[in-house]
Amino acid sequence: MNVIPLPTSGQTLFDRAEIDRIMQLYGQMVAAGEWRDYAIDFSGRTATFSAFRRASERPEFRLVKDPSLRLKQGQYCLFGEAGQALKRGNDLGSVLAPAARRLLKIAD
Image 1 (cartoon, rainbow, N blue to C red):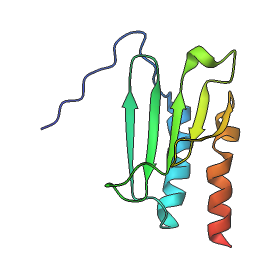
Image 2 (tube, rainbow, N blue to C red):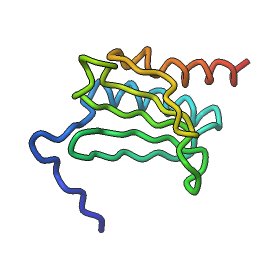
Image 3 (cartoon, rainbow, N blue to C red):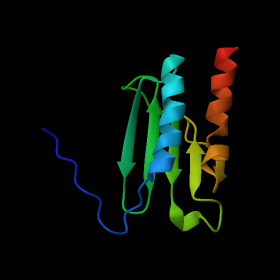
């Protein structure tokens, strides 16, 4: 049995609304056959959600939340498979827009 440690104080986490928005997009991508696995990582300063086509690959998209950047570049950053920053900002919906647009292209 795996035991997940409880977050320590000061640790960056995704709140309920953020997780709901992220999992809504993830569910749509799974239904479209694009994503098959995900991982969530909480380090001291950042929280990361990674979505995979296959579990053995690099993540296709990686969403990083770093609150220390909220007054500079924005606390959210969406990275592509090659590690390039696709979108930065403080609004989660607009940062996830490139992934949502990809979903629309798949549906057409």
